[in-house]
Image 1 (cartoon, helix red, strand yellow):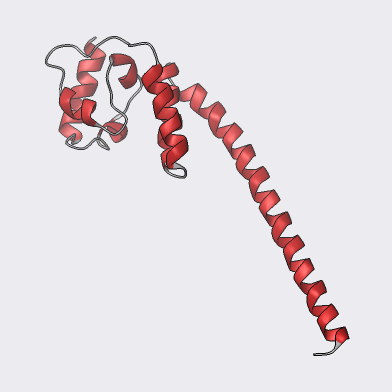
Image 2 (image 1 turned 180 degrees about the vertical axis):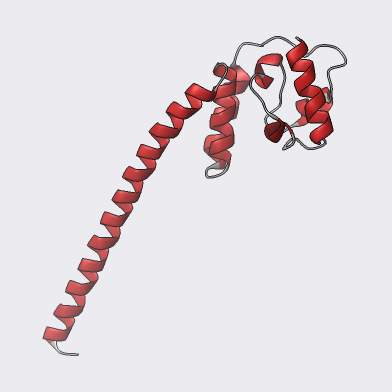
Amino acid sequence: MGVYAQRRMRERQRAQEIARIETEREAAAQAASAERESDEELMARAANHRRYLRFKAELAAQFDPELADTWAARLAQEAPGTPLPDLFPAADELAAHTLPYRCLEDLAGADEAELTRVKGVGRATAKKILEALSAD
């Protein structure tokens, strides 16, 4: 390969590297923007600070397990909320979930779709939980 061909190949490689870096920067900027937007949405959706931390941990679990652990640890450090009443529907299943539901504040604003993601909680049980929450 001649000198001119080698130079052209290096220039193409540099151009490709620059394009790759620019693409990564744009993706990072978009992700940061989406994070800010989703954070604002989460704050608006969250019934309380415990719910906000739960949402953050669940979102982080999809992309970064270490970050999810950090959010879960922050949730665990929160002051204890109002304990679930005696004979609360599916209390054991809720407590055994990856991010345990330990108090009424953890369940504030929960819907059937969220509750059915808990192992051992189906639609009927989720409805019972929601009824118990609305009764309190």
